[in-house]
Length: 293
Image (cartoon, rainbow, N blue to C red):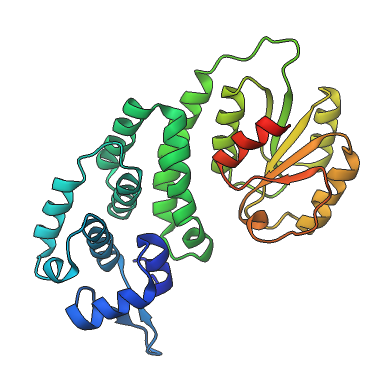
């Protein structure tokens, strides 16, 4: 069973921890459990209830009215107001609920409906990427059951691979070249696949090397194809080397190329990077960078 701190509930629901505590005391909306050492934690049932409460509250329903609803009534009311297939925030919260319930049919319905209406690229930018950002830190801390991670990762991976395969390889002679890879020891490939799709769709020529690529192979490939850009994602620590040192080596090896980096290891840290190292914090960030480079 997964266990969540109140801060993790805040990250998943968008409701401030202070507000959760007030609702908890005043309305008894959710009920924390306690460890043997008296530390509060919340289970999947409380998370699901809070996510449903967040959806209703965001739609203007007063918390005093929500407090009187049973779990069944709460779910029914959420279903009745969550029918808008284009509401990104609703879709993300419903995807979290489907993940916690391991409900593949519901997950597929949410994704397929959004893709049908908005297209795959908008789905990646507006709901898929934000969904993984929302739950990514929980995976890192082990708060979410690994089964949940494998469940949603495999669903998204299947859709991404099909979408990437359906994109034509550019035949433009002057197309910019990208070498995309994960450093040796890094296996969190899903984020890089998001960007692979966006880079390929933008008409760039992509050499996708995949996960855990030895440094020497990256260098050899990039020089062989005369790449214009390198793109990597660093979520966990790189095997045998500090992240800043690894990026410094890449910068010196390719002083005239731009090196794009993304991932949890670089999101909030790594300041004063070499001028040719460029952080990418989101898909929209990448599309803006394409206009400048």
